[in-house]
Image 1 (tube, helix red, strand yellow):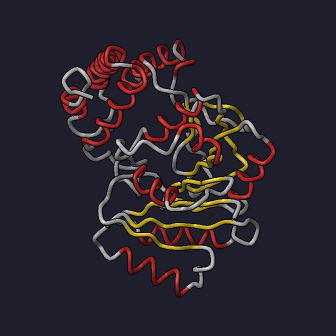
Image 2 (cartoon, helix red, strand yellow; image 1 turned 30 degrees about the horizontal axis):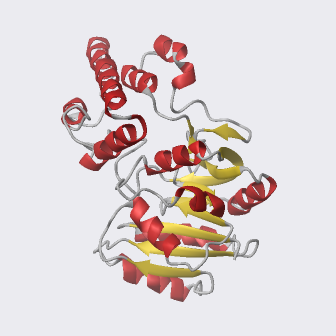
Image 3 (cartoon, rainbow, N blue to C red; image 1 turned 60 degrees about the horizontal axis):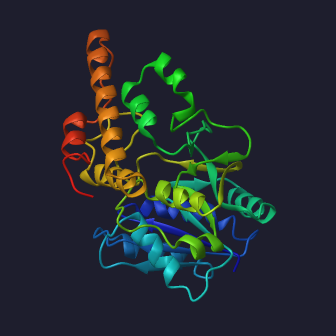
Length: 314
């Protein structure tokens, strides 16, 4: 086996099956195994996915593993990775709310085969109509938090080097981190730094993992030849491209706080919190004065402050 593909499902059985349908086309070109981890959805997802695997005769390359609790994205992926007696050369993490374009998986594998010092690579994520999504990123910092809260064009141009989500590249290039919705990891990276940090329930776990890999000397690359449709927000319900987002869940703030405190210390995390709060407060005043539409999650500023590293322990 050359590649293990892991899909963690929580109450998205229909999407997971669509993802498997798209993967079925790829199985003829690569030696891969797919593991769907059913994270105790409690909505019948296990039976629906199992039936689809049997009805479509996917069992030669796909299996279903079940959890007795939903421990989050890292927890589910780690289960599939840890039960194998030996990892294949590559592990691919894939969201259930994705559909892989033809050749997308093969493109990642071939890229990794040709670039031995690349430890992690990510796909070009896109809308169903082919519009690219930002999926190649820089590591968060104090200045990126200020810019993200402020949302002011001239300031963003001044802080261009620190913007977390720069314009989408049109060629393969080195980046700080790639989206966990579709990322491939070399086996040796796990040997060097271990698995994903399960203290993250969801969000920031792939940022943390890529930072740990970078500190261990591994390069992360963005590979636009690997095209994957990402139905934004269908898996987590946190983000959306059309409607106003729902109130941001506590685990998002907890994950963000953990990332900054764990990797940069409490003092740096506090400065990052202050930077975002200042920027966002200015933005809210400007939005009200200019009568711009309110597309922020409800009670975002209040929730951010209550969940900040200043008011909470690591």
